Image 1 (cartoon, chains in turn yellow, orange):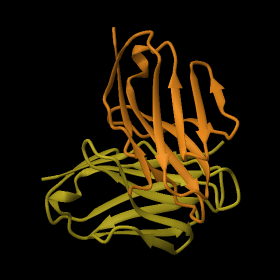
Image 2: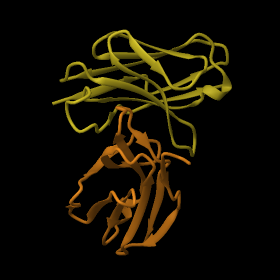
Image 3: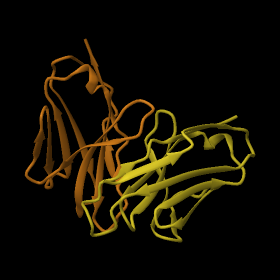
Length: 115
Length: 110
């Protein structure tokens, strides 16, 4: 069966510090991968998605970046965090286009507080 | 116009009540539809897919109306544990990026 792991679960970072969130998927190959952010009391905002190794599409211009160094690994980074980067970050996967019906499966999330 | 719209609520209902949520979508070429449940400070989890013929899973019934471009979720005999935010998700129509509604908050009280 497929599983998705995301870490760290919680982190508190000062403004201007770097960020690295990691996500790995097991039990499937060539998944579509996604990073979402959810601010307190708000909906899900798609940040990045990837359909393959090294292929990253950005939905929202900001100081965040994403990388996919391996098929089932997705990393969210920032060189310098802003206060507005605080939120609940969710990694998700879905089957590649044409395989499956398109439902998303989420990791348990990473709660980031920037002080 | 937003691609996927939901009434944010909250819907505040007593235990045992029946409650229904609607969700409208703008892309008529959309192909797959889902309802997710999100508990406070947790990740969204798939509740059920929505099929053209409608589908039922215990106390939950989902329906799709392609002509009017909306999907619905009906919860019968509400339980306290049903309190959560329910997210409508639409997929396909030329994009593999699922589109989420902002969610409808349900509060079931004793």
